[in-house]
Length: 217
Ligand code: DC
Image (cartoon, rainbow, N blue to C red):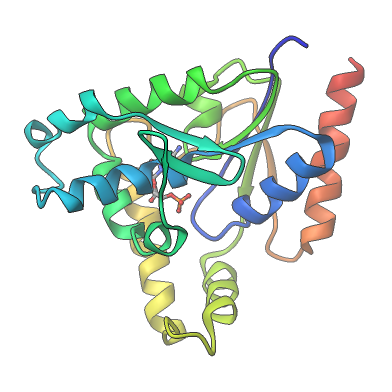
């Protein structure tokens, strides 16, 4: 089949990952989690002990490939540990500001869109696929997103106080929305879904109907 792209953008904790996975699995789309790809680059940068903010230190980008393949993030064909990826939020936010990093990721992301694809991230509807067939912008209040994260990690070794999580979410929103290149923002033609008071099922069903409507033409 020809290419059909669904772009799902939104801030940290808006439910992008879980919702994208369910929608893609239900409709048999290939899902590409671009946040995981930025996290993989951040881990590679950390491995090399470079200053994450210094673009001139990123020569290694020319020698690596990053793909998101069926739920697994791979660097040079090797799977990256999921726990390590989860721990790279701040570093990913840092290195994703750099033009050099974004340019390289753009190539990886555009090349990986074959057939029916659902890609989620921050700039998919605005930069990576401005002509995407369906564009969704998922949002939720910072307090609700912090509450979800708090409940998700409560009782695990990475448990944290709610206030600390809320601060991290607000800081990351600020960084993602104010960077000069490809900042997080809703594309003019994206459909906004505020998930603050919706269940995962409600959001999933809404997105599936929008995609089916478009597929039927
Ligand atoms: O979605 P996530 O939390 O896994 O993303 C991690 C970081 O990567 C996020 O702070 C911003 C960056 N990112 C980006 O700049 N562009 C994307 N398309 C996806 C993620």
